[in-house]
Length: 317
Image (cartoon, rainbow, N blue to C red; front, side, top):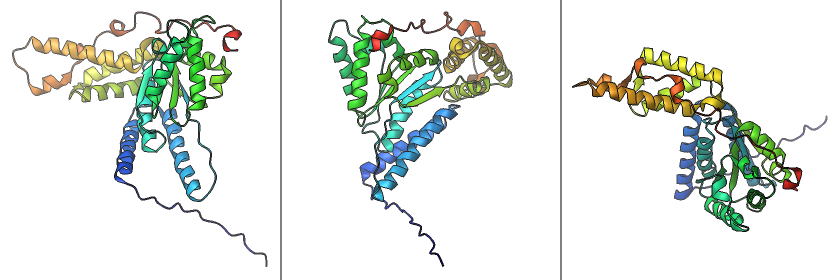
């Protein structure tokens, strides 16, 4: 009779945690719980769960004596204004710190003006300084495509070259996130093979739907012990549905919600200030009349970013 193949069961041996390890893990778990409570962002949450699962499985493989390779975690965040890119980057640093993938987990947020200098060599100095500040954490480059906006003679090329080298040389010490609007980021990354090959994780941040934005508005008010009365909540829903029809790039997603909520609180304050006394319920309730017209809080321009002009092919040679 043929022998049945044996099955090897791999069990990871638990490592005794010290006080610092426990504090680190708890900070990561708290950040993960806070991240999972964020409204929407389901594709982003799925990717973060994949990264954490991979880290846990790699730890078990190592405990079993199996060979593993460190993963490249540099990322591209693509999304319209107010879709949560910076918020996710801030949570991500703390989550990956708790998982042991980062030494500090802090976020350093920069844009073109923080990286591009005024003379030859100055840009490399500024960019390296930003990288040094971010070691052990996340370097978040907002509107990263702006680095290529000036063309071949612009010092932005120097910043890109310095970033590309650091992404490769220090991939175990830092996570670099390049963020910006979807169309501009697609063109920017595709134009530079050095970037596209070194940023393997591409995260799309979809626009929020009206119902998600309404939940965000509820959360913003609850943080100030306030709430909508039924009429105000229906009016807010109608405003957000109108904004949804206009499109996220024009309205700013969660930024629009913040503007509407803050305008509503100001108008509530003006209404209450004319009274001689208030009940507690009046102080905590936003009424329909407190909410402004949508047009009064929309951006004045059609979009936040000027059109991006792709440089000639020599720029990325």
